[in-house]
Image 1 (cartoon, rainbow, N blue to C red):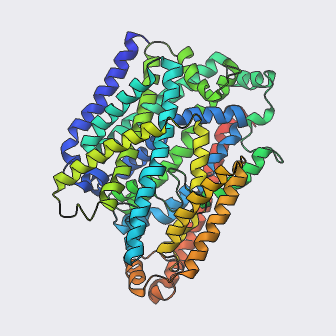
Image 2: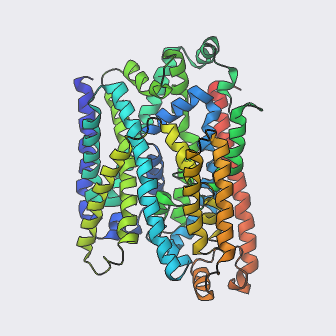
Image 3: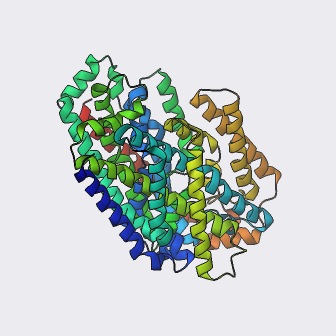
Length: 538
């Protein structure tokens, strides 16, 4: 790297630190400001922040590896989650904002009653804040270490320590305000850099037509460029699992069934329910239709320009190193710094919100806001140390993706139905979360290597477990159910709890939303297919 590259990196670092300093006073005013931006985020800022969070340092590497091993169609492992994400847009985004809770774990004490609800709130908070959240940050850190090693030659763990320190410096003091404002800058830079690298790589290959021809000459099958997998192939079996089971049965960061995680945090942070709808819709358009194609094109170019890599995920950073001139190489470094920091900052803030508000909420209830914010900042730092430690366990980004998908398989239906079916109770959700984790670990330890088999086994066993607990335990009491329905008015299967005057109105409304959802899914995938056709042909 040359002097110009370090000037670019220095300018970026100065910018994010300035954002943190400028918004530190507002972010530190209270825990609602620190974790929810005072519920004043506009839809466009919340939507872009969600997209930036899912644009992590590992994502271009994972997509490059998928393209090399399974072709374009391999991306259905995460493309299929658009069904769930758009379901959140039309059915759940407004409901989350109307609920008025501070975290999706707090939803438990709104929807359920008694000690089981209190237990579920703490259990879900710990479940998401530690194993799930730490796994995500661990694989993001793993992706960043690969980029550092392949492209820049810096000392890996010294660089990771500096990145975590820089991320903590701006977001620990400013809270969610600093996170979302930095996300907007980071996403803009990251998309610009990704497009520049893709265009440069295609130019080096000789154009898109030459790319198609050289892939065939190199011995890659024509199916490599197919949008859908070839019928009868192993990938086609996986595809059926993805689109038939995975999107509704399991959670994926950014596309949890019914909304959840940091998506719920953003939906709870916006101005009103219409802003929640707009934020979710913007996120889905940018996440699925806009963002993947520069990565996919670069991954295909890597197969031509860097054939035979033992770890195909390294194709992306190695192309950066080979193709980018001084100044632009610095910009690409900023792309990965921004992608890494935007994801880590969100997950640190989101994870800390569970610990502070759901686990220690009662103990801190009478404490002054300044004390609560101090505890929040300390929690953020501790979660950062745990994330670095867990990243040492894994050596493949896609491996962690698949494990996390299986870890929550079967719990998705409970998260979808708890808004619309009165019979779901706290024990249903506890059984789903605990059951999916235990079954997924058992499947992994049994030596089953097929992801499709493991996913179906985990989803099937978990579903049986939570259904059994649902019907063997008592429903929530009438007072709790009636209070929840009157506050949210979600419609669905609520029987006597629905006032007669709105029953037919709700039925008509949800029929229309269902049509919107189906049409939007078709349109989103059609745009994705059209983009692929325009770039790479039929």
